[in-house]
Amino acid sequence: MNPPLIRRWLATPAFRALLALAFVAAIGCFFNAGGAFFHWSTHRDMLRQVSVYGILACGMTLVIISGGIDLSVGSVVGLCAVLFARQTLHGGQPALAALGLVLAAGAAIGLASGTLVARFRIQPFVATLAMMVFARGLAKWVSGGQKISQAIQHPDGSFSYVELPAVFQRLDHRILGGNLSVVTLVFLGCVLLSWLVLAKLRYGRYIYATGGNEEAARLSGVPVARTKLLAYGLSGLFGAVGGICQAVQEQQGDPEAGSTYELTAIAIAVIGGNNLMGGRGGIGLTLLGALTIGTLEKILSINAVGESSRLMLTGAIIVAAVLLQRRRAG
Image (cartoon, rainbow, N blue to C red; front, side, top):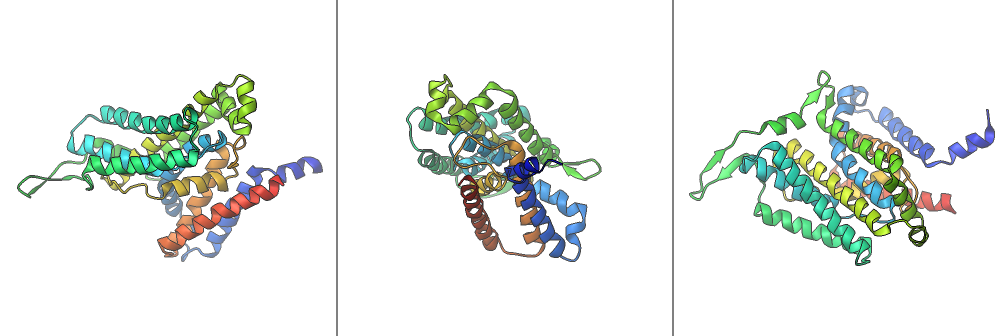
């Protein structure tokens, strides 16, 4: 045993994230809703429900490590859910073409945010807040302010119904004997992609350098502007993936979908131990944060705690996590 090594491990964000997850799991064991917490189906559903949040948190992690923040991801979910439903349900467009269009739209929103931050030097909070409002308005314009579902209203006021496209069934399917949702696999794929970017690509090192000290990174030859564009572009891309998953889960495109999702994505990244000041963190911490938030929300759900209390608790978690980071940094 090496006591100094153990002390260093106990002080790491990974240990604190694991401790938070263990604490939440202990709460679940105590408030188990008549044993429901101990059933795999409960955790299977938790993984499905947290997947969209987790996908957004993957992109949020890249942006946070680069020293920024992205408040537009929730609106990107709504916009991309509407676009995907419009193209597949009402437009009859092939799945691959619709997927390509929606992913490109999400990436474009992210790149627009990155351009405002990197090229025009607008504060990330302000730039992405503006993009949040713009994307939500665009979602309502594209949808006409209505949910896009299997029901199609005709000029005479009558309705007809279209068949649900196969892509909806495939993405909302369960595999391995019904024990795992495809949406959860999509989330894990986003985790893997984010890990490859941060751990294996040169731009991953650039993201850490930019978030750690932007001026020093620039003087060292790091293409800071391109790095920020990459981070925000990937955040928008993940937002599009989240929007597609949201649409298939709800079997419709709702222009209000994704409201407050940016709050949960930030909470996941922060509770996992990613530093809001930038330069430190990792996608593994985000995965732990997603499991923690997902488990906590499932405990609240099976114990019939209202949504208002959940939102207040999420806000309190963000504040507590940031205060803990500041205390550790001090």
